[in-house]
Length: 299
Image (cartoon, rainbow, N blue to C red):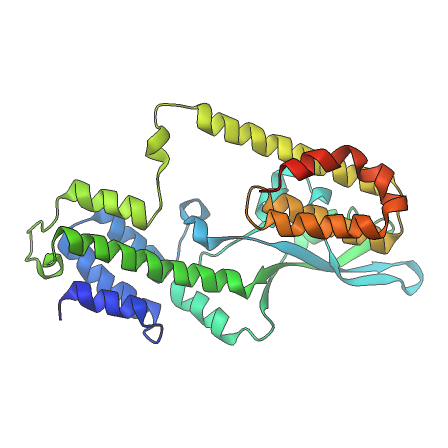
């Protein structure tokens, strides 16, 4: 059986672990002579040293929760932490989990997860510094990111799918590419690079190269959305709502911010509107200025 067919079968068969699949790909990368493909495989097998190099499927949107202590024995456990309480330069990092581990370690986390979620603790320095700014008259004792195990499963599945698409395209170019001899170029390098960019990295930014209008529009929209959520959160805090309701709303606003621009935003929006419907008399005047912009963001 050819190397390309071996890789295809391994990508389809979930009983074959991903490190084995990627090691087969490493042989193919050597025969194709493509450095980017080799580098991607090495990063997946050994882990990424720099989060700036992470592919998008390894960056997960997350929420945060914490335990809080107040006066006279009061407190909150497993309370949502609205990241709008943190300085703007920290929100991006704490709204995401960056999966830099080797792919075998990610698979092990999924296999050993029984609750459906994983926890990534906040730095003690961050908890100590900002712990009194989250809930009024309460101190954060412990905080963590809540990572859905389904996000890791999707990342692992994405690797299989990307590999499968890549080798199918290589096979369409040359069915014997996997059996190439040393120093032989079974597929033109520019073709291999194009297939890699299309099916492994998903990099289609070259479609708008030479123009900054697309990037500028995206950046402006992102800033506008962030400002909207910040104002909504400030309005909720200023309304002096009952603490449980304020905590619930703050958590939902953070979920809206984290999922802005994604398909998951619609679900969070409906949750927000459900809470509004249950407390219309209290919340109506508070959130009224923000309803139209929020509705416009629903895909």
